[in-house]
Length: 342
Ligand code: F6P
Image (tube, rainbow, N blue to C red; front, side):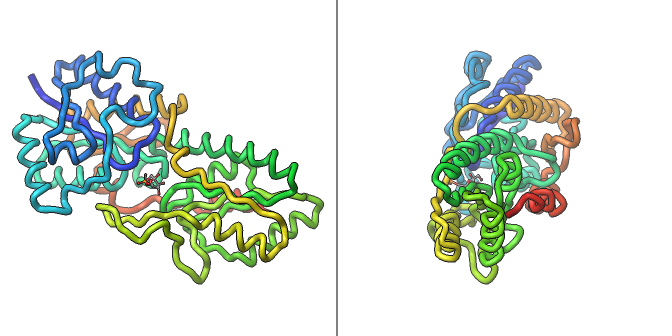
């Protein structure tokens, strides 16, 4: 019996279980044995695995998170770790591996593929910053959560005549801020791709208030930075992939707005709420399609590829291209949002 491994790595994300379920269902149908690797690459280092059958994936479609657990482990950081990954891959007799993750997890998948291992990928992240796919699963759920939060903040902002600043995730890409900001009717959207000119932001809010509006909603991406400054960090410590922890820009922006305009301002940081809970129907369907495609690539022995959405079609793209550069916000798209500023 052929064996396929499956793992989920990096930040968790709604829709992961839909991908796992789809790959397992398809694999079992094709006579494969499926090995679930626990906690991302950590499970391959520690040989922490469990067999997945039809029963293990029953009822998981609407569940957030991942039944396999996850971690931000980079096995290439220590020679000993990657050695164990190679050994365990062989020891377990895996014919192929499906890695579900974002740029970090798929970056490792790509390196392993280049070493000669049979690996394919499925693109996950709420940040939507992976290249070669129109969208990653998890993003739709995240922007729906943020849009609902903005709607709720609107009513309290209006009642109290306040400026409400909402800080959202997305790392170095402004996709979550942009799309939820447009959907929620934000009066200003600040993204990492464009340095923040705080004077301009305040002028724009003042202009809006001079038209008779007594409240404003400002959506700011955690990776946004001031024109002549650096990123605001929660801590300087780097994770295994060399990423800093972002966060705190919302409060800085809020303080400046209140100081410079005199309007009462409050700040909401949505944080991990954006990654939790049940996936939207869109993410369940996209995750299912990605899971089937990933298993199809295994069956066809078309390794080193990632399932991707292009237009309405699910296609295969090289992992190498998908992880080579970050997909940041398209300025034509941002210009649409700007029409509604201030
Ligand atoms: O990549 C997903 C993401 O949620 C980013 O938007 C955010 O910067 C980061 O992960 C937070 O990481 P952690 O869960 O380790 O705090």
